[in-house]
Image: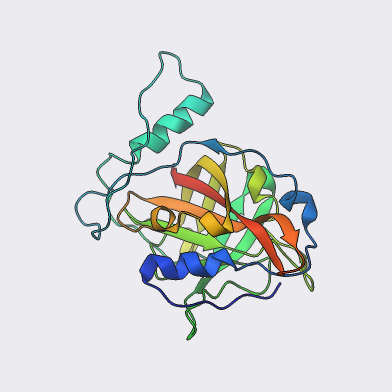
Length: 240
């Protein structure tokens, strides 16, 4: 697929704007894009504690509470809610080099990406690679959004590593690895599919939040008239 180029807004808008139109191509991977799982889980929100950069307060916090005998799903939801209130852990951030989501068979090398001179996010052309936005948080950071994004498919390369992202189950483990064997495990707490025109980027790409990971690709129907998929698939995860 052919990465798009976009205007450069501010820090978070740079990423959001780039992702809105990031995945283009000929619609090779329609099996995952056309039949996504429904939205599920609790999106982690809230403001980070001391040490985090300032930012706009969230419009609403995640619900909290526990049941007498919680199921795996309720424990996952509680973890998402708790991520909004816990004091951040020490900074153990590292540069990511590999992504693994065993539940959907996704394994991909991770490469750092920045914005180009046009303000577009440099998502790797190879859909089997995933780009880490180096302007955001790094894995292991006590606060901020770690953003990993990749193309869902490519006319030249075929299906991407994130082709089944829309089917990631709540409670799945995402592991991001770095040099010398260091790694950070995340627990999937929510899955959303957003129309690109209404992607809530101000909330999704905030850095003044407790540590969380976002995995992003394209989904929905492929519009051949525009060369773009109609939606963005976003999976939210918090440190395990």
